[in-house]
Amino acid sequence: MNETNKKTGSTWIATIGFGLISLIILFPIIGLLISSFRPSSDLMRDGITFSIDFSSLNIDNYLYIFQEAGSYWSWYGNSLVISALTIVLSLFFSSMVGYALAMYDFKGRNLFFVLVLLILMIPFEILMLPLYQMMVGAQLIDSYFAVILPLIVAPVAVFFFRQYATGLPKALMDAARIDGSTEYGIYFKIMLPLMGPSLAAMAILQGLGSWNNFLWPLLVLRSNDMFTLPIGLATLLTPYGNNYDVLIAGSVLTIIPIVILFIFFQRYFVAGLTSGGVKG
Image (tube, rainbow, N blue to C red):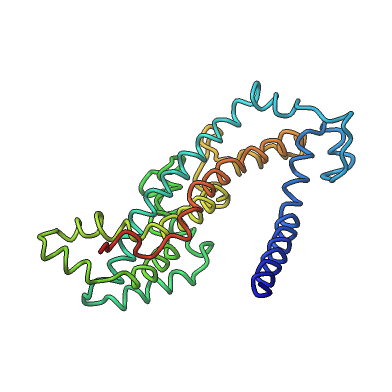
């Protein structure tokens, strides 16, 4: 009984502790949410604060975004398309590369893995100039492809999938080959489902990175209609006027897709490594 009480007490302490940490982490978002309902004059005078004056709160900022800010929804759509394509293509190609490096013995495998690690250690800022020249040469500037192509096979994703795939049972591959399955069939029908937790985790990381990506889209996108949300919101701050009210309300709305993405995939984080792979 005492042991049970100790476990219960420890659980409550851990819950309270993590709750407090979560509340501290949420403070900036709470301040942003409150400020999104404040008029521009209050924001210019006081900035983002946690004080709430109910007499001045209104939904005018959101009404402006939904009714008059047409460019905002164009930016929103661009970010959604680019992020969705980046997630799907990155998971597809990066998982295949990582799986091949982990499960197949071929000449130069270790060299390829070392190259992945080397690229992983190179800052993206160093690679931007040659990548930009490639996009110019391919005449892809100011298009979705210019933003997506350099991110399709991410070194961090390849490394992550390779490390995860090393724990997959190769006996399943041998059994599938005996049953006459092709290598592609083994991967897509057997191994890929076992990599579900890794796919979910990397989907969140790749989606978050693509959604918040600012520097690379800024280089390759030209027209206002092609801007992503980070670039579009940045254009609201100019030497001739600062639309902080629209900027903050728009920033609050940008959080929604990432929250949905996390809620959708987080339940897979604790899935078993080979759940459903072998049944007695």
